[in-house]
Image (spheres, rainbow, N blue to C red):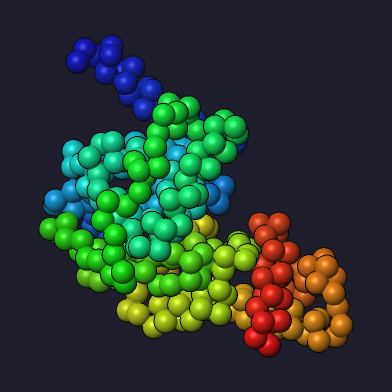
Length: 308
């Protein structure tokens, strides 16, 4: 390569670093351990887990909105190794809309049987929605079939991936945020990727698909594991953050449930609770994503009505 072209390449690389995506923000690569990384989604968007092993790369959750930028980050640390396995925390589009793109490169998509059941009817509708919104490159979606995004390997409760230098356990934890929540755990490194089971200092989304009681049980159980680093689906993370974010999410639900129960007991209607609950949340009220509060309050109200 000539000095002139080398200089241009360096300049372009610098511009890509300095020119963020989506309103002056871009995905950010964070090293968690040797060969293990998290990609921080911009503006609270989905975080991606990344494990670079001797036998290939494992990717957990990916948004197609900024697919190009995330792939660049993956390649920057992959050392030429191919993406071998892809898995999802659940079936939502901000998690699964890269599946087919990785599969076209030879990756194997894995998922729980429940994820496969949820994804099959959902994915084609999400593709249509994304094409209308125009946020994802059309060539990434046009002509793509749901079979390209579906898990090739399905499992019940657990499957273990051997990447040589790293072992990744995929575990289906049952209905929580949605019916198909799956986590990825690296027992040697004590790193846990939990997707939308965890929103860090952001109001979580709970709705009719959720079971917040089981969600809390899962959070509490995971907090007892020998975990050094937890990567949430949304929000900030850092090496060594430990179980504290899991317990904080549990406390969030416990606080909101208690307030919804009290307001319901005082004769407040559901609409009144949805309008007034934020003021009852104390320190949690300042968190972003406040638009999610009414829906979560409604789900807690629904659960309290079904099982007081």
